[in-house]
Length: 209
Image 1 (cartoon, one colour):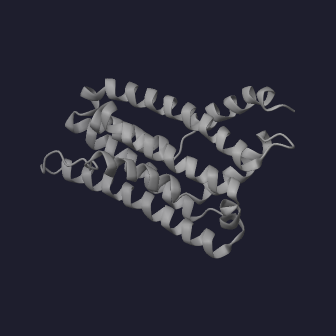
Image 2 (image 1 turned 135 degrees about the vertical axis):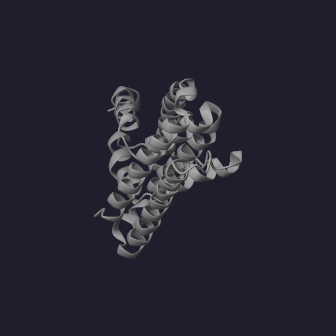
């Protein structure tokens, strides 16, 4: 089947993937609620940069190595779980401090590149991303097409779609920023975000190939 004919199914699949709950969604929601739309932009771009790196790694065969190598998979799984649990614990600490008169302690990663790096690390330290890329992209690479170049092109389409989707989500959350930045609401948001991130970290730690 021609690549153009496969694009509607590809775009639909990407939209469904983007809308599914996960570490990216939880992180973007919290960053947009705390720092507004502008505060979430570098996090979104970092997440998508990490996704694109995984797509290229899948096309080059590195992601397959992670999927089949027990050592590589375990190392990546432990790192990914640790990153998510660390972010979750920081959010819990913020909720606890905010509730004990220590002021506004919501953890905001400072600096554009720091927030970009946070998003990239969360995406790259997710072993499920490697397995997903191996299973997802070959379905949309027509027979006879160069695997690496076609995957790289499809990944650009996915990055563009997800970036627009997540920025729209961040914009919507940011528009309600005055509500989310109320002390009581922020403490609750931090507590919920912390619980979600820790739960996702535990799920990553328990992930089987």
